[in-house]
Length: 346
Image (cartoon, rainbow, N blue to C red; front, top):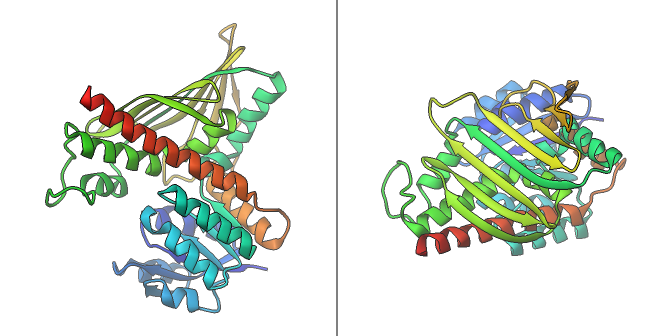
C-alpha cells in the first residue's frame, strides 16, 4: 500500500530532496497534495506528481487523500504544523529539522504525538545515512574510546539560512545584507539560528556518541555567515565549525571522530545531491587508511523508509530519543548564544 503524502512547504528542500526521494519510494508513498505559504510554488511542484496544490494548511489537512504529512515549512512553524497534523488525524508525520525552536514546544508536540499514537520522524538525514551506522558499528566492534569529535561544514550561501540570519525579527535594519556580527545581540541570534538550522544536521549523530551537554567552552560567529563552537558532551570535547562563503572551495561536510585507536572521517555528500551514502575513512595508528565502500541509498531515502515502517506497524517510534535530540540541540543553541554574548562583553 502506498500512503498518500501531503507536503507543507514548497521550498528548495522539497523540490530537490523530498519529492525526488518519494519518487524512488513509489511502492510506499505517493505525493497527493503540496501547499505553500502564498509563494505560488506549490502548483509547479504538485504538477510533477499530478497532485493537488493549495496555499496555507487548511485545504491540505482537510484532503482525505492525505494520510502522511511532511512538514517542510520554516522552523518557527514546525510546532504549530505538527499540532495541526495531529488534530487532522495524520497517520504519520515527517518533520524537517529542527523539530521545534524552544524546549516547551518540543516537549508538547512529542507528548501530543505519543498520546495520539502518531508515528513521528525528524528528518535528520545524517543520522539515517547508512555510513553513520557503519561508523558507529566500527567503534563498537573495536570498543574504541571516543576522545574528540568535530564537525566541519563549508558551504556556498544558502538562501534559507541567509534569510534567517540577515533578517531576524529583532533587527531594525531594512532589506537583505550580511549581518553585523560585531553587534553582540545580533551575533548571538545568528549563532543560535545557525545551530538550529545547520549544526542540527549533525547533533543527533554527535549525541549518539556523546550524550548530555556538559557545557559550552566558547562560541563565536564566523563572518560572513558561520560559527565556531567548542563544547563538552558526556565528557568528550566537541568542535563545530561552519562557514558559508560565496565562490569558496568545494562544499565540505565532515564529522571526524578521534578515538584511542584510530580516526574516523565521515564525509557527507553536498546538500541537495543524491549520490548515495557518505564516505567513511579510517586512519589507524600505523597511518594506514581504510575506506569503506559507499552504499547506493542515502539518509533521505532511509528516513522515509523509517517512516513507512512506523506507519505500517513494522517498527515503534522512539519518542524519548526524538525529544532528547531536540532538547540537546535547543540547549546547545541557547548556551552558544549566551557564550557569544559573554565573549563580546569580555
